[in-house]
Image 1 (cartoon, rainbow, N blue to C red):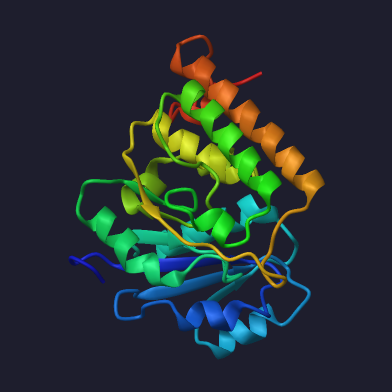
Image 2: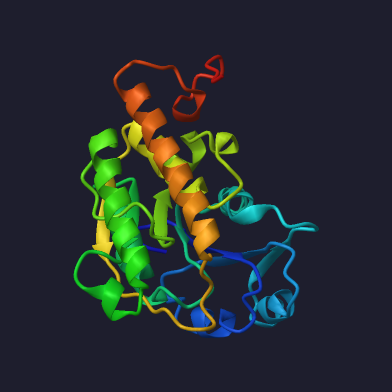
Length: 253
């Protein structure tokens, strides 16, 4: 708990057995009240290890995708009384020790969401991010900042924190169940006027860390561009889009 607010860490997991214990060992339990793992029909020992670690475990009976996993995570965190929810990948690519800092930024009341940026500082390339991913990140982020009228260092971090107010208001059911979910969720938050902060975060790329391949990266990049284009049209009043509105009467073609 921080400033009287209950903090939950959610772990969207898929075949995370090799890195889960290392990740959980560094979660600051003096601040974190609840750790929730949602297993997306893994084929390894993720669930057994999570249960042995005393986590609250949810298991999908079929693979619902990265976005579908997060939807379950956030719903469970709200149901269990979280005021601040930090989404952390259990692959040990991001340091869990930043959870208190991210939660404090939300507890301060100055921000509604926080992204742990690999681009602020020199953490990305130093941590082993493939150069083609770094270049793609920079190109996509520049394009998104122009189309979305924001000024973020990156939109693609898998380490982020949200206030309860954000999670209760965003229509996450309208977001994809695939990897583009993160970008769509962030676009929704910006469209509804929520304040997004960033914190510099080192990252580690190694054999056991999960990473999408080149083909999936291309599909993700195209999805990001589509989301940004839709946001730009919505932002300038050229298109009504239910992805960015809480008005259930709005529809997209």
